[in-house]
Image (cartoon, rainbow, N blue to C red; front, side):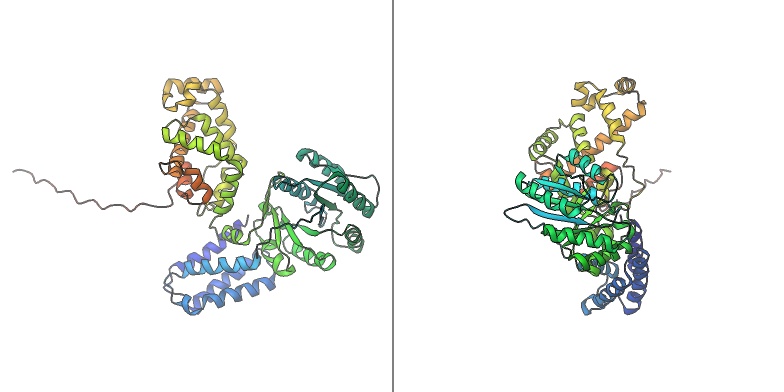
Amino acid sequence: MFDSLTDKFNSVFKSLAGRGRITEANVSDAMRDVRKALLEADVSYTVVKQFCKDVTQAALGADVVKSLHPSQVMVKIVNDELTKLMGPVDTKIYFVSPGPTIIMLAGLQGCGKTTTAAKLAKYLIAKGKNPMMIADDLQRPAAIDQLVTLGEQIGVEVYTEQIKDAVKVAKNGVKHAKKGGYDVVILDTAGRLHIDQEMMAEISNVSRAVNPHQIFLVCDAMTGQDAVNSAKEFNAQLELDGVILTKLDGDARGGAALSVKAVTGKPIKFIGVGEKLDKIEEFHPDRMASRILGMGDVVTLVEKAQEQFDAEEAEKMQKKMAKGTFGFDDFLKQMSAMKKMGGIGSMMKLMPGMGQMKDMDVDDGEIGKMEGIVHSMTKAERREPDLIDASRRRRIAAGCGREVHDVASLIKTFKRSRDMMKAMSGGGLGGLKNLFSGKTDLMGAMGQMSGGKKIKQRSKRKRAPRKRKGRKR
């Protein structure tokens, strides 16, 4: 996401890197490029104008002008202003007692509203809630069937009625939720291809009938300013509590994410970052600003790690590493966990300085091939990979239908991963705890795993010149 904007911001900062100090002239040049980059990213003109004004004022402050590192200072200033533009953080869903808490989703047709309802339900289950969904989109063909199917996938009940009265379905659904003891109701409403009086009248009537505790507008981030304009009109009619941006993983520009809060005054609550039902994230403006500027998002990476790595299992892994008994079965467990975290490529984008390494080989499809090779090994070989010599490699390759060089490549990858684990553990048993707390040198570790260069370069010691021995005459 935001690849185009990230590249352009980085080029602006590089142009300042060779300057001695920040001056009004080079700030003006930088802002011209920033303004162009934001407009090309489909950010609202009004937002761009105010943003550039705020950055310029901050950059020309007395303390900043004295700085000897203009590019670093500008990165910090732009990061802070982006955070203000998209903030503050407001991801909380306010639950009522006694329940159920009613959350109504609104939005245009095709914005991903029905899928978002299921994603939100799955998110709430992980938070210990017992949600129910109401299929109240009675306009789009198959909308009810789609929500029922999604509900079955995540184990959530979906209330449906075969009538065309959206107000009645919503009211009856809420009554059913109260009887069933559900603590959250997610109401999926109907949309249109564009905003019209009929749609707004229906959704307003539904809102008055069930009196939802929170109304979230679902917007397709890829529509850019169209999403922002629709958010503005919906907010005028419904008094929104927040916005959910979908398809942000496919939005290389980022105009909606940067504009919607400033234009509507309503916070972005969640973002959709993939098609799967677990691909929904709380929106944190500071983390998103870091991603846009190519500085990674270690906090999100740590949170994903905490979700996938069991603390007890992690301690066992650390002990194995300390004893030198870390084998291929353990390696596969870790690769599987990384896949659940969004894949190695997705993790790389969250690493500071790693998101720009687009040529790095991080093919998640390789994990299936790795499993086939590992399962072709004996138990002894999986426990002690150092046993695998040339003849064993040939046998393993024949057993899984792969080439010998595939087996050799896996062994090399395994050794890099083992190096990564050593870097994380620091030789002790606090490794994954450091990973969870954000103290681990993740860049160096991932650099070792990927075969790339380490981020932190050790200073090279200068060797004393060799004394040449004179020839004896």
